[in-house]
Amino acid sequence: MSNLTKTVKWYPTGNPSRPWTVLHEGQTWEVEVIDGAGEQPRYSLLIEGSRQEEFVDWPESWTQLPDDAANASQRAEYEREMANWERHKDVQPLDIDDVPEQP
Image (cartoon, rainbow, N blue to C red; front, side, top):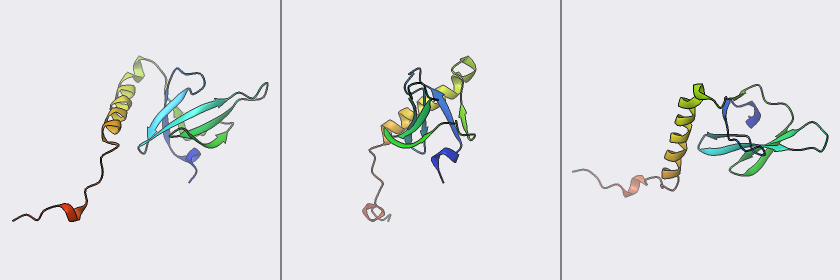
């Protein structure tokens, strides 16, 4: 499945070169604007800073959330999710063989 067909809600960043971001499936996704000197603007999907796909038309399954007061609770939820992910990204999974048996 192409990343362009996944359902994603994008948050505005205020950065004109990378105006949209989201934490999707534990990875930071960004949309980068590619200025095509007089051509129609194109976009790149960046995942963890690595260019994945380029596109011209915004995918129908993607939603651009507004940057306003009505969106404040969704933005706060996103920021909490990002902070939680940052805290736990280096936690290694528990090896079941290392768990002592219960008496």
